[in-house]
Amino acid sequence: MRRKIIAGNWKMNLTLPEAEKLADALLNNFTQANGAGMILAPPAVYLQRLAEKTRQHPYIQVSGQNCSEHVAGAYTGEVSASMLASIGVKYCIIGHSERRAIFHESDSQLAAKANRLLENNVSPIFCCGETLPQREAQAHTTTVKNQLVNGLFHLDARAIQRCVLAYEPVWAIGTGVTASPQQAQEMHLFIRRTLAEKYSKEIADRLPILYGGSVTASNAAELFSCPDVDGGLVGGASLKADDFLKILQAYKIPG
Ligand code: PGA
Image 1 (tube, protein in one colour):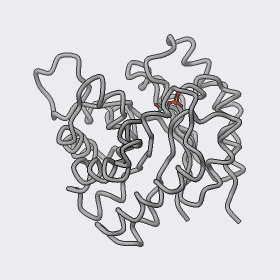
Image 2 (spheres, rainbow, N blue to C red):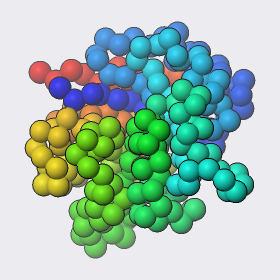
Image 3 (cartoon, protein in one colour):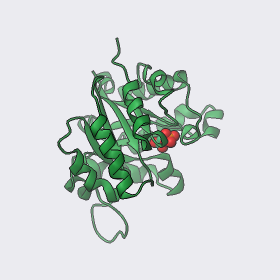
């Protein structure tokens, strides 16, 4: 069975006391009744603190929100994959649409970031997804396929199995408009088939594909009931412990 993951992307929010309070509330109230694990992606400056807090927890891990595509050196302001690894970070989001759009990150930069992370035993959480004009032009599948091919498919069969994927339609991120369960399932199945064509059905069937984009406590259960949706990458609703815990509980073991 595939790993089920509920990940919280805190983006550029919260002070350290607020971040600690949120992490404590999640740690104290986490119940793993449904087999889903939790990943918290706080701002980089809080990663070490949260990695220490969650170290003993079997089902809660921390994730970076981004990393440099370079190994080390004169890159002022950047955080390297080896730095993340050295403080106990096991995951790192790459290719979030905000990084692609606001910071103009290219597929080739993302491919290099994936390499740096994997060299350091950090699992990339690779985001893909189309914009509204791309969907309206019926280019959503081509867009996502190109993102996978150019950002991820240089990896060999062993390396791809250490990745987590996240389908995040850009039009659903932070907008309150979520993809319908049918739209989510269609794209997740498309991504899984694309992975199967490149690697193998066995590998594709094992890779977790998370859905992201306006996931809330009220729509999570429906989205997570889709057979190819293996959990969520949650932005806004991950900043409130109650909401995020409800989203975690919304995942039900299939069958
Ligand atoms: P949202 O963000 O849940 O606030 O839409 C999701 C994301 O950006 O990962």
